[in-house]
Every structure is written in C-alpha cells, then in structure tokens.
Amino acid sequence: MPLRRITEHVKAQNWTAVALDFFIVVVGVFIGIQVANWNDARGDRAEYERALARLSVEIDSNLAMLESRE
Image (cartoon, rainbow, N blue to C red; front, side):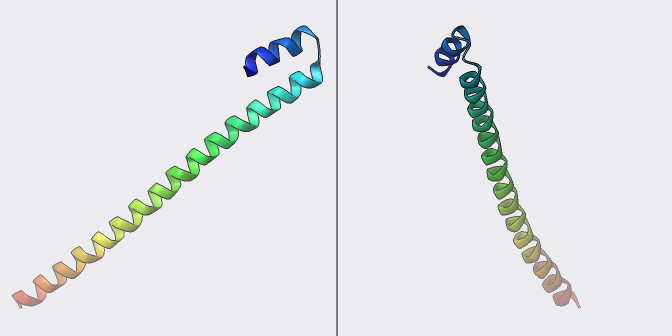
C-alpha cells in the first residue's frame, strides 16, 4: 500500500508528498532498529547480571573449600 501511494505521488509529481512519505519510512526504520538495539542491550545487561551472580557464588564456594582444607 505505501509503495502504491508513493508511486502515485511520483507520477503526479507531488514532491512534497514524496519527501514526506520517504521521511516517514526512514523514521519508521530508524525507530525499529533503535528498539531492537535497546532490547539487545537490555538482554546483554540481564546476562551480565546473571553471570556476576554466578561468579559471586563460585568465589564463595572456592573460599569455603579453601578454608575447609586448612
């Protein structure tokens, strides 16, 4: 549908409408990419937090094992 509308504007040489349609498409793509990046960053942060928690448990376990050997 949007492609048909753009081609109609180009055929009618309504350049303002063509530019507006192009701008809307570019902004939509930019917003979509930005949302995907934010989602990836949130997932990376969550994975980092889980790894940090596992590291803390492992350090405590290693320290307890070392103390029991002494």
